[in-house]
Each structure stands twice: as C-alpha cells, then as structure tokens.
Length: 187
Ligand code: ADP
Ligand code: 5GP
Image (cartoon, rainbow, N blue to C red; front, side, top):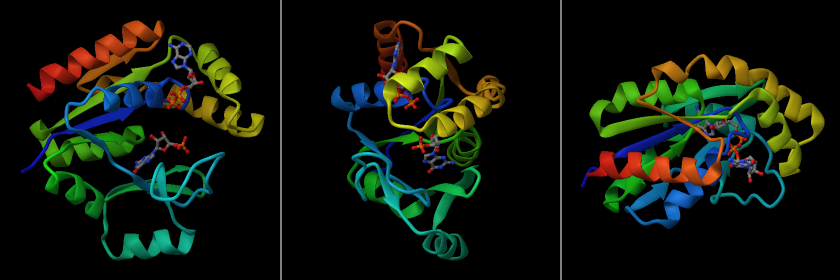
C-alpha cells in the first residue's frame, strides 16, 4: 500500500501552490502532506489544513522525539517539517503524497525515498517577476516579501539537483507540463 511521493520545491512566489492545487483537483489519488510549522497562521490559514501550527516549544519536542522525516529552519526562527505520522497516514489510505517543502527538505526526502519519490523544482521566469507576484498576492508584508526574494537566488542554485525543473512563465503551459510529468511518474 506504499504510494509514491511527489516533492515540489520553489522560491516563494514561483507559483508552486497554484500548480499543486491544480494537480490535486485532477485526481491521481494525490493527497497533500500537511507540514508542521512554528510560524503563525497567515490570512485564512487553519490548523490541520494548510499546516499543523505548533509553538516553537512543541516543534522542538517533536524534533527531540524523532517525529520528523525531515525539518528545516527555512526562515530565521521559522521551522517547518514533515511528520512521519503524516506520510504514514496518507500511505495507509493508498494515496500518493504531494509535498511542498524547501530545497533542502526536498533533497533530504529524495535521498530517503529514492525511486519512490520524484522531485520537481518550480522556477520563476525572473526574480523581478517573483517579487511582483508576491506583491500582487497581498499575503505578506513588504519586509517578508524582501526576505523571500533575497532567499530566491540562493534557492535557484539547487534547481540542478532536482529530477525535473518547470519554469512557470505562462501558467497554462506550466500546468500542462506539471500534469505530464506527474502522469509519467505515476504510470
Ligand atoms: P508559491 O506557492 O510558490 O509561493 P503561489 O502559487 O502562491 O506561489 O503564486 C504566487 C502568486 O503568483 C499568486 O498570486 C498566483 O496567483 C500568481 N501566479 C502563479 N503563477 C503565475 C504565472 N504563471 N503568471 C503570473 N502570476 C502567477
Ligand atoms: P510558507 O511560509 O510560505 O508557507 O512556506 C515557506 C517555505 O517553507 C516554503 O519554501 C515551503 O516549501 C517550506 N516548507 C513548508 N513545509 C515544509 C516542510 O515540511 N519541510 C521543509 N523543509 N520545508 C517546508
């Protein structure tokens, strides 16, 4: 009953969530892996839907209890991690897992799961387009946007380590590319 893992990673604002949400609606027995995070909910985010929102203390307890497949301090004082229980929950239902995790987490999961996992990097057409998308999304403060943009160039250097890179310039093209890649992998 072991499903496959499809790992998505990208600089924030590249359109990764847009692409993932599109694929989740298409079937393929895909289920989103809800990560744990120590950051506070943003906008309409709910606990147990977008993330399991934990206090920094709760997050540290789970690290100490070896409850994560992987975790990273993606932004200063903001921890994110994939819980073992979450991957087991999805696999038990016979579903394939979709992960939205940072570049280091992606490399880590790919290493652990090998052929059972496919890693996909979603690249923006440019850093300027990335900034514009984050501004237009209206979910982050300018300070948070600049933090994310500043990290993007660094994250782009990891693209070469992924199984597949999709440039999200024209959205419809990127959605079609992502679906083709997924179909090939799931067989
Ligand atoms: P991420 O999950 O990578 O942070 P989102 O999916 O939230 O990114 O996309 C960031 C913003 O850019 C959203 O407002 C989204 O609607 C928009 N967007 C996504 N893809 C494109 C695209 N190809 N062209 C223009 N805007 C896009
Ligand atoms: P955001 O705060 O915008 O929701 O996410 C910030 C970053 O954290 C994104 O790059 C996202 O992919 C990453 N992230 C979310 N969940 C996890 C996780 O479980 N592990 C790792 N390593 N990164 C994660």
